[in-house]
Image (cartoon, rainbow, N blue to C red; front, side, top):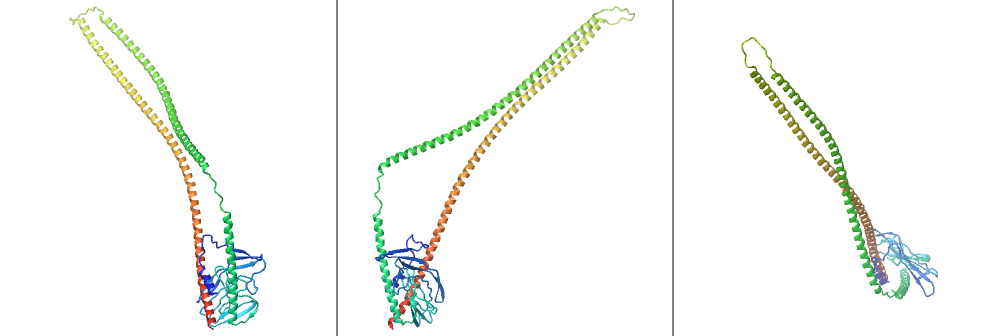
Length: 471
């Protein structure tokens, strides 16, 4: 019995493998030769506060519930196999007494300085050994640990220590026999399962080598079609860009044509104005020429009249002193007046020439200024048109860049949302892994605690047995 309890403590450890599921307890169904079936279910127990060495410890472990198709299974005494929950507090054992009972009762080992030891044993009739002031039982329960508790089908009967220990040993041996039979049945089931899966092994793989050439050919065709599609898309993009360029050039040329037509219309208006001005000036010139001819004619007539007056002779007899020669005097007067007339004529011609030269200079200067102004206006118009065309091209480029920016933002937003979803999924998976690790660590610590407490129970039980043997 001590060897079996030691083996139970040794086998306590963390769950092995990645298929350990904490939330669903395993179950084993066994078929007995008599036709009845038994199911053993590993179910968790609730935590029971334990106190040891003045410290309270919470302990939770598993128990086996066993039922059979032919009725309740029992190991000895005819009692049903049920699970019970126990908590115990141990200290150094002192004098103890044994109280036993029949069916429905319990067996308790108490001591004056030990509080309680209680456990449930899922194997028919439990055997209980507990010591403590609170009373309890101590029984074995398969799974993560065992308890000691006993229910008998009678009232409480006081037994002596030797009879109680004998009863416990008998029940434990019966339980061990049952465990061995269950292990043998489990091994047989494992062998049958293994043989079944070996019979249902994977079928022979088909030979797909003849399809590899076709697959590779189709892959090459797909790659070629993909490349051709990419080239066509590239050509389409290039054509779109070229069409955009031609559209921009067409708009530029259209604006240049409209500007040239506007310049031609302005030049035609200016030509009409110039023609009207030329006609006016020609009329003024003709008027001035007529006036000049009229003035020359009048001047000639006046000169002829004055000459005619001067050439006439008058015989005047004057009874006076002899005077100077009249012809000489008239010649002098004529010479004097001709000099005056020539002087006036030269002055008028000089004034007219000056005025004509100044007017010509003013007309040439005005013409040059007008031409320079027109050239500057045309240059400014061309500059304005070029700037407008450049502004339109900049607006088009801005719109294209804004579209590209929106598409890029949408694409990167979609990529970022995908990455964020992946990050969230990975974080959730990491949290699940962490929780699983924490759960397994907690289970491992709990099992280590159970192991240590089982070792203490075994040591206590060994001390009791040694004390019994020494007596």
